[in-house]
Length: 64
Image 1 (cartoon, rainbow, N blue to C red):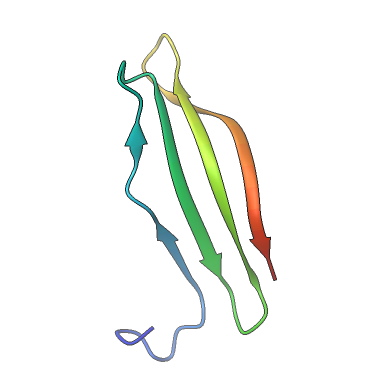
Image 2 (cartoon, rainbow, N blue to C red):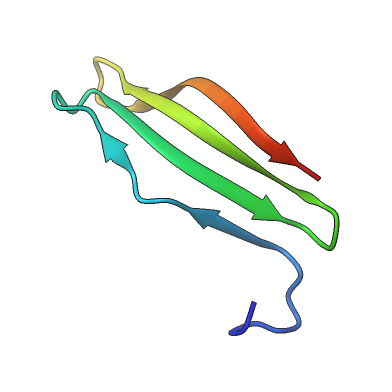
């Protein structure tokens, strides 16, 4: 928030961790929308036959 002091909303992402075969990936992300507003989730993604990433499962870690 130091770069944009007037903004109260932002999204942050972890580095993406990919499986050895390149077909699965995990990424943690969180969004903040004010003082007591936001959430953090882990997304498991899998590449389909067309090469597109599809969400397989979401795991919520926190919510405010």
